[in-house]
Amino acid sequence: MSRNLSEEKLIRSYFLGDLPESEEDRILERSFTDPDFYESLLMIQGELVDDYALGLISEEERIKLEKGFLVSPHQYQKVRIVRTLKQYISNTKPSAIPACSADRDSIFSPLGRRIRELKPPAVKSKSRQDSQPAERIWERTLKEAHANRELIISLTDDDWLGLRLLSTLKSNPLSTASYIASSLEGDRPELDVVLSRLVECGLVERLDEKYSCSWFGSEILEKIKAITNSL
Amino acid sequence: MGKSSSPGFEENFEALLNWLDQDRERAGEQYEIIREQLINIFAWRQAQDPEDLADETIDRVTQRVSEIRQTYSGNPRLYFFGVAKKVLLEAQRRESRSWPLEDTAAIRFQEETDEDSEQLYECLDRCILKLPPERRELLFDYYEGSKKSRADARRALANKLAISPAALRMVMYRTLVRLEKCIQECIKGQSERHGES
Image (cartoon, rainbow over all chains, first blue to last red; front, top):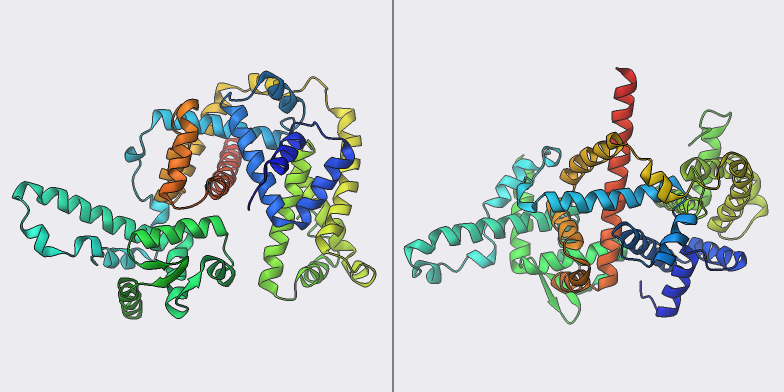
């Protein structure tokens, strides 16, 4: 997904309608055969929509977009969504939104509740905690709850991609991110986010760009297996 | 799929999937990617209804797939692209007759009613709740902040997630697409309910 400046400029020019028709055809044709190039098109399209919606482009570019790329109601809807989203974010604090909506409650909920009982490494060292003053107990409880929440999310987000990834790493230690992406047939950027979260939670260990399931990760997998067998 | 009831459609559609990939699951994925690409190129070429045109393109290829398999040996995606160019040309001819030139995006935005905006806001509110919490927070972090601080904030966000800024943009793009699909379904559902009452 690497993008060089000249390619980025070319794509921007395409969306601004600055290219001759023959060049536009070449861009569209390439978008069908080169997945990286297609992703670059999507990203730059997204950036232009963002910039237009939030008033971050020049007057000249605004006019070009309105007379070209944004004429399609399909494209203009993206602008409306970004504007409404910005307004929504200004009106809402993330903490005001419940952590789990009803739609996320599924057959996996009992499993989630059981996993919550497991302690991630961050909250395991009891000897230090015991010497803390009593007034710090609530802080510890909050940290523990936060760590547990992060742990569950790292496994369940993106249709349980984290759990599938952990299981793949358990069978294939010292795998590269590319290998994991190919064996799970997942999107690389999304996979990187999930991997990074698993590392932060201590479920996965990273060594020289290679990933393995940690001891804690193995313990979690074993417990999930035991729980699912008993359900 | 617009003409799914046409004679022999199911058989042809099976043949189409088989042409895209011998493995049924991978063929399904290929089909979805091609449809998404078609919708995008029609939208980028300012078509009024990109989804309809994408389905029309797929229908045309589906109807002729047995013949295409015998005579065409290149990348199936390029074949779709060739048909899409024809479909687009025909649509542009039709649309140039019915489409007022002064119908620019800015005018359309001014014509939006309060009811449209309220409906969008309401659907956005519902759809945001359907996103995984982690993704929701990411969305908030990504779009928060002023113009000046935004670039720095996004760089910091990418660092925090240990991914490149480009990868972060891709994740955000996918999140917005997900949100957009949910909003479209929500608006459609509301309109249908209003139509019934």
